[in-house]
Length: 178
Image 1 (spheres, rainbow, N blue to C red):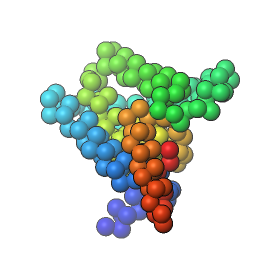
Image 2: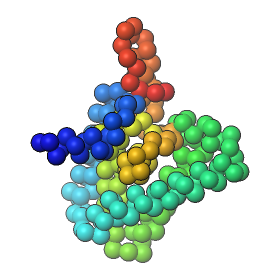
Image 3: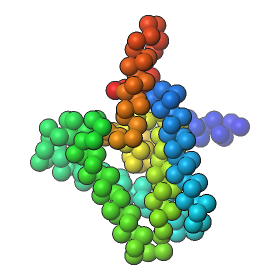
Image 4: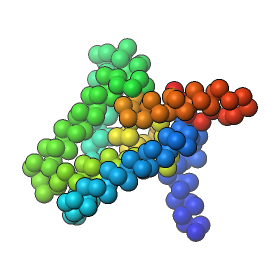
């Protein structure tokens, strides 16, 4: 059991949770569904596991750096709004990562199961870490120990509603950022 506790501490990096219990539960359920359904329907191979847990997170880190650098140089005002539900940087990053994943599925033995498994694993990591940003960045942020954020189309509305609810209850600490 001590190994599990040290593993959890290393993944969460002792950071403050940015999401509340509803945001955590919705990410956990969404992640489990995103992993279980495609595997149940199509199965999973070693190529898919390697792509979902190694290749796609590394590609996401690289694409995130390129998108951020591009927006810093050419549209810094858009980068300042990256925490919105569907900001330019968020849409570009998600589209680029999905595009690369589809290209991998077309040109290699990797199947669509890898894409869904990557997204599901990212949601589970986000739930575990209490991460409020786009789930596409959850695994790269866990690897680097950072908390880079862009808005999340799926969960930002849930997190914002949960944060408003917490603020309306006096004496309750706010767990989610809007």
